[in-house]
Image (cartoon, rainbow, N blue to C red):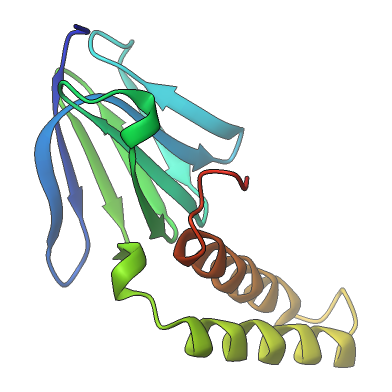
Length: 142
């Protein structure tokens, strides 16, 4: 059994997750990164992506998946994730996520890449795609 650590995931609305974990994987500015107990101290910005949690005593086949948006992770003796939004697959409204994806794609086609709204629309698109992937099972998608 691997060593565990305390993990908390906090959104502005709620304490999304609190428990003992052996591994947490998030998407940072550098790509997907995994953190385990005794990891070197770190603070990283998070991108919209999948949050994967291997809880204490569980194997990697039974990881928990959630969709999270922008935020940051603080790695010390425990790990804290602060994110603007987090949803378990059962909380995701698939039809709403698909509408958001189509809306962002449509708007992106109508503006130039140097338009000030372009970056915001790309984030909205990535957030919608991520929610759709997590709702669909997430584990086979990046």
